[in-house]
Length: 250
Image 1 (cartoon, rainbow, N blue to C red):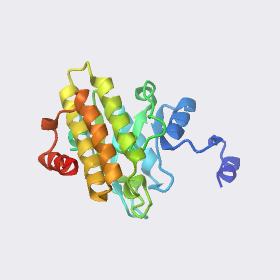
Image 2 (image 1 turned 90 degrees about the horizontal axis):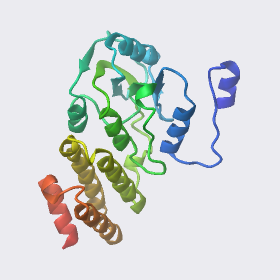
Image 3 (image 1 turned 90 degrees about the vertical axis):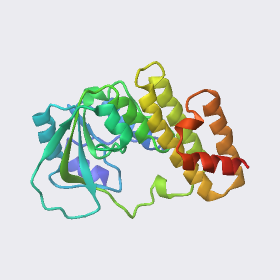
């Protein structure tokens, strides 16, 4: 199918990995060869509205922001609505709080230069949030538009909906450690630790619901390492997360 598209449009470049290296590594490969002014990520089971990329580009030009985000929708046929957009400068705080801009990488247009010094952690799940947390730490503004341009397939068998495993615990831990390392000497560390606490909350909740003793023991071992290395403190976690950790330990 890809070859057929490429034969009809010389702008399409197909890159083959010898083995499936995962989503993060594939995105890294794409970024390594990209030459355009902007980069956009589209997951294989999702769609874009027909007007999506031109609208993203218009807002990027009008706002002069290095990142533009849109709302997503599960609708499959979208009439083009009126375009309104807003510029925001409280960048890192907004990302940490999920107030205006959310952690998936796929509903945003990026100026290529802001991504050049950042790559996804290869071989992990949930690679979006640690990657974007580092990207948003280096930009001074972003724009959002009310127009839904990204069509998300709610019926997919995504990583977030599949069974929880030790590999997924490792993925959370590697993401947490990468973010901490990036901000360890930054005045924004305490703010970033709030987002780390969110990742811990999600990881603990998923393991708690499995009621698998081996997985629980593995999680507790990893959490002890985070506490020992002072990457996160117990008091920074939500009360419900603390209770779940205590319950799993006892």
